[in-house]
Length: 165
Image (cartoon, rainbow, N blue to C red; front, top):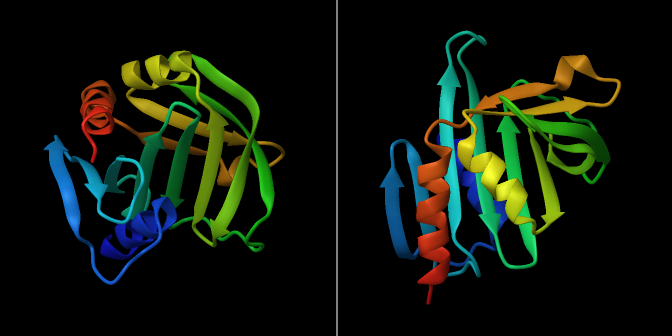
């Protein structure tokens, strides 16, 4: 699990000599942090799913007034080509967010989506308990990630963003 959280940290900002934390808080099992070497705050959550061979799941969300970035790590994926662009429908438990959204393969277990900032996306995420990616022509790699207390985590992320130094 630590390997996946470390990978998520690498994806959301360049690593410097150490993990100097300027701000950090917890909301349930979400970590909200602004690391010294990052420009923006991150909300991250990792868990093991006993119903899926105890596999690791990690999600990292960050945003600015220009973009929303979502990184998803799942140790059941085995992507072949780093940099490959995949298309997936993105949804929550009760609404569709985007169809055919672009996701970049970061490594064999990680994809990253970068989307133009849209408050309605943040609103839908804040009400969600699950985030789904339904990859085009690839049901095997489609995923449903649990995001309980997302509204509280995103509120803490917003507070972190508004107060970052």
